[in-house]
Length: 479
Figure 1: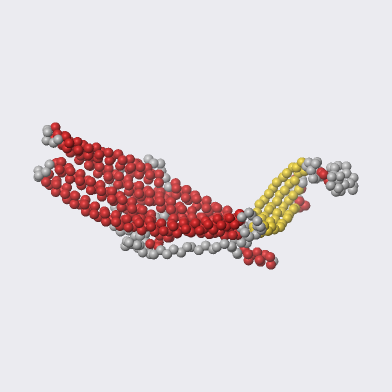
Figure 2: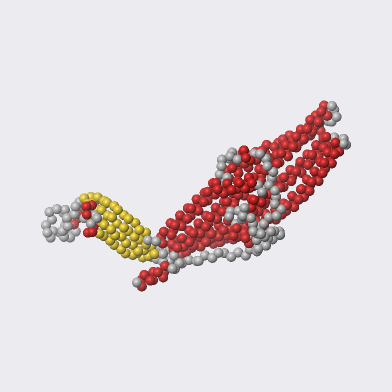
């Protein structure tokens, strides 16, 4: 009874360090930018107010192959925790077997004497032992046995392993969250780029149309001797250059559509009918919620993943330390055993045994010490990795926040440029209609307006892409 009480006391003991979440001193305020400290929107893509984009992101969360693979990895991690926890319980098995054995006459059994004809009191010439038992040379043996073994987790080796496995489950969950966040950002980025390419292609086509009209006018002027060939060839060169801009934009549009299709778990061509028709770029939100700077630690999946990896590494130190201590195992088996099948299930066929085992490591050639040092080094590396991930997360968030705010200033300036050039086009049209300037001059002003529009579209694309990167850096969306 006292022995059992001592075992119960020891069962609560776990060697090795107990894990504590690392402390990080991260301020709540952003460095150089005033921002809205409201909680970041969970579905951040809704700020673009584009139903198609929202639909594709929703499809991606359900059918993206990388996300589904990450979900399978979570199930695998849960199963591995169950495997690790199994050693906390007795292991019970049922063994039913039958054997037929032919014994060698030169073996240990028949060396005690001849199989037949031995007289009472005769001794074996091989061993000097008396021969009194008749043993058949061919023997059947039937066993129907239950066996039980239980390794007592007195020093917490198994429990530390379960602790590490539980941390790996949470790591797998954060890995999936990170995959979700990356997938959402990639769909949004490709969608923005697609709409940008479509808009730029339309502007290029307008420019080509104006250059073709200009070329036609200059050709007639050249034939009539009003201009020299240099002026005509100069515009021809501009026309060829404009035409060369169109195919890459078309190819990039197809590339974006293929990427979105695959990200939503579909073959590349699936979304062509739906996405080939041009749509305007999503609107740039005037205001975004960034939350507190310190919120990054609980929102970013990569930070959460690194922290769980550190927890697992710390638990593995406990596993390594426990390996230095003895292991205590209880075992027993019992059932039925008989040389004859007919009386196997007879009460006289009962058999049993029980016992215990204490296994203490004495010398392992440095294996246990090496395992401990390796697990301690892994925990140190995991600590440094966690701190590095935190620093990188802060860097990315600050970087994209300042970039986005400066993008908005650039958009404002380019919008003013477009407005002013729009006025210039209007005034030039008035002068052309009054006959004060020729048509080519009017076409040139229109082409100048297209050029500034292209600059604005490119900057809007950059701004939207930077906003997506900012949302990804803030860590929202996977919830």
